[in-house]
Image (cartoon, rainbow, N blue to C red):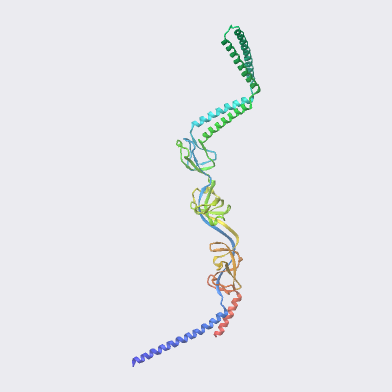
Length: 448
């Protein structure tokens, strides 16, 4: 009996629970249907965040690393062998262009230069004599020689005639006659030579004689230049104003051809050399500004400009080498590590919006939504420079436009929107607020 009563109580409780649940679901279903119909009728606005498009400067930059190098640097090497006679330099010493750096002691080249100088002096003196013409005493001597040989010829002719007469009478031998004839011929030859010399002296030097002697002078000058060149190779001078970077020898060391003696560079020629990827190679040109930070100068930012752009890309890395001159090159040291910020492009009056405001459509076009009178207006935009979560809008948006930056996913052109502040507060245009207030009063009346 007790069990039957207990089962009856449990059955009654289950029935009441089912009935209550059914009643609750019926009431809830009626309420949701009513609210749903009202939502569709009213089309509630979407909450969005906006930000005004601003006007300012936008720059496209490129971060690279480079090295400080000297464009004017030289390794001075020996071309002659010999002991070092002069080398007072140490690393860090400054020298001026043309100042003596190294002198190699080679006495043989000094002797060759003296000998060549003496030969040149003799050759020039002979040429001067030829150009000045013959002296009168030389002509007098030649005339006296002609007179002498004329008399000798006349005497030899007379002796020969006498010997010929004696031989015809057989008073002398055939040999004596032949000797007299030979003496006469010799005298005639000497007379001809004397007369020819006299004519040459009276006529002066020929063009050929002058040309030959001029050639002798040129040859002597060349020999002297060669000797001096050998001697000058023993005296090494600074090619430009600079600083000693490395000194490999001291006084008394033996210099050998090709061995480095001194390394130096010009501090005013220090530049920052770095490379630019192929994608940006065409945009780099002389005159672009750079900012350089050096690990050796913490906290300082040096400014400069691109001074040289190499004409071709590196075969292996496909990068373009660039050099930048800085405003204070003497603060630099060769081989310093440099961090370079290169400004590739700059726009002064750019329209700037957050990157979140730009949406890319399936066809590749870019759009942004601008809030106008409580509605979302879709605009096709063209973008430019993008940097630090900001993007330049070249076309489609004007400064001051309220651009949607959050809540724009799936937003349609012309949709009602409610502008939401960053603190979570909601607001909308005045006309829309009045409509919401009126709708709220109607809902209240219906509930009453």
